[in-house]
Image (tube, rainbow, N blue to C red; front, side):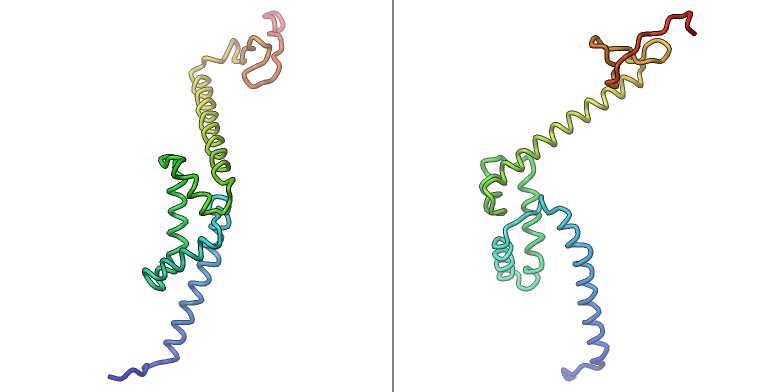
Length: 164
């Protein structure tokens, strides 16, 4: 048994194909997903370099490959509502290199909460319409006290029975 390869051309072909395949997947799938989530996954380049260095020191080349996904996962976990802001805000400032990052994410959380309450209100209206509570005579939506229908359109006077 010696250290020479039995088929160096095949080994070269497999290694080159594997590298090109990985490059294709990372360039067309992983990086695209990261760019799409750019605002959420924004991290300072120095933090990325430190993470690659640290995980490379701990786990070698495998750690270098896993460094960025691990830091991104850490940031997603940090942005959850279960982490108190007294812990989350300083770490966000360090990760993004932006002192306004905590305020930006607080604003997004407020918008998300408002969106959830608006969705709950819409579903409540739809369920009341399904039960027939807001449907008036002859299947028309009755006017509110301010003269508007539930849809926001001005209400017209109801036709008299002899107009039919």
